[in-house]
Image 1: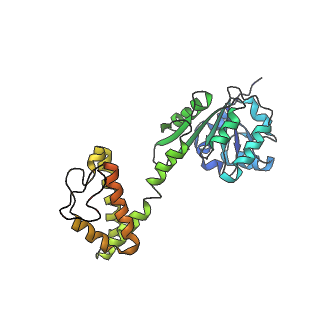
Image 2: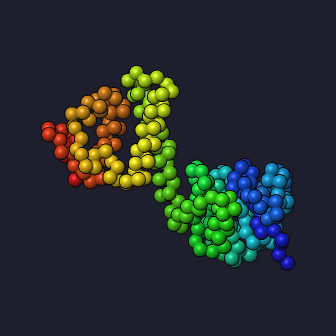
Image 3: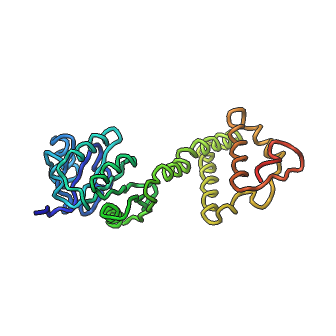
Length: 273
């Protein structure tokens, strides 16, 4: 006879701060809670204020699906518990919540019949990244999004690395550029915190314009740049930032397939057509 609970939990780390801990229905839908030890499982259940600790992962087999959260250092350990458990995975959902699961990890559970999916917060309010093949796992991930009243941003199966690269490019990779822009504004005589606000606003405005007009929002999509002014700007930022700025400009011309039609020859005069 099956459990009256919909999901079980397998966890390590800050499970309560993950999507699992935010579920409004957790008190009535979360049942067995498993971990590397009964003591850890008890702590997780107490933190969640839902579910009940169990001594082995075998007891996760009584529910329709398993919600898993783990820091990177423990994911292989938890996976080992699942693989060694006496669970009939056929048609059972396994949702990785707010944690990274490599394609190899996911494939190992799929080979046992599990219907896997990933649900994780994007860092943008109101949006939840969902990845998975059609089946119980993907349906469970979508349900989590609905329950949390978040928009599910579904990405293609096995596209995690590409998606994460986009996130990195739009976040961590660009933060140093914002910081350098603020430093140049301070060098121009603008004090803090105004320099930081202006730098942030410039990047925000560029992003808004791109969202509205795409590549046509690029500053030189129609009008040509003045090479002498660009060269003066590159020279002014110093030997460390200068090559970076030049490479970014060259990359911009290559990306948008425009040519700088400068009136005089120079490094920017014959960019990618």
